[in-house]
Length: 185
Image 1 (cartoon, rainbow, N blue to C red):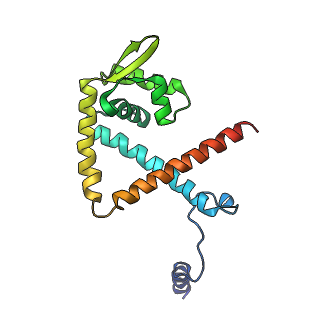
Image 2: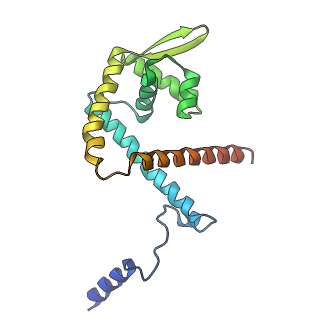
Image 3: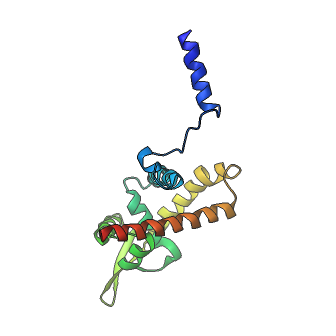
């Protein structure tokens, strides 16, 4: 009898009779002024970890294992438009505050023959190598096969995805501004 009663309670819990509240990782933060923002924060946590796992495994499937998420993002950023990039530009585009993180990644990618460094005046520049371009090309093929094609009929429209990206960029700006303000406290 007790087992049936517990099952009935579980069903009632999810039947809409009792509100479950927002889906968050920290209820104490959701109790504040914006539970929706807490839901977004939790979604960002899950999405960032899933994205990191995905890009590492996609690059490994493309034949280039052992790269970190940061190294993969930097590689794709340098491949973007096939132009030389300066360290400051890479940091700016990827919103990376610690230049030493990018410098270390560039050294590792250069050692793997995926990038080549040079100089323009006094500034160090980085460009993609043929091997690096091949890595990015193969990554794109794996991505299409494992992510793009299988989700074509299930994911939101391209317009909705673009609008979501704009919202994420807005939220990124809000977090950056809040971080600057917090640094002054």
